[in-house]
Length: 127
Image 1 (cartoon, rainbow, N blue to C red):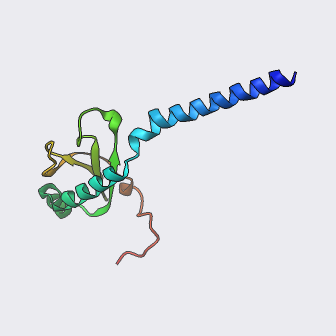
Image 2 (image 1 turned 180 degrees about the horizontal axis):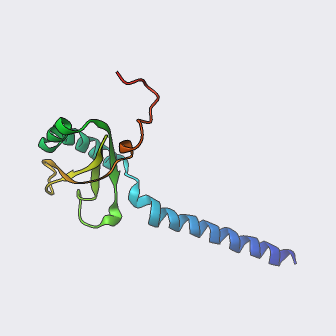
Image 3 (image 1 turned 180 degrees about the vertical axis):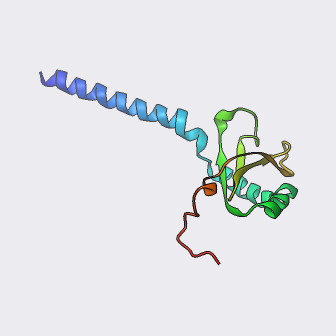
């Protein structure tokens, strides 16, 4: 009886560990940047702010936040799975590299922005 119970617990334990390892490898890891990738994303933010598309954007819309993301499941080669999101009061603009050397950033499209319907999330007063 004790042996069956211990065997049952061991099988459950191994199963749970395999589940969490698989979940991390397949679903979480492709979206978490490494230390080197975080540096690359930071440099991409700087290139985005210096880009011509960003300057045109700031003339038309109020920039509220800039965020970075990585999606290795998207396919493609380095650096095309990196993305910089510029959130404005009207929509979110998605910037990405225009070539493999990432010499320039370009506006690749736009999506819905939470700031179209909501106020900023930080509790500071606007000036």
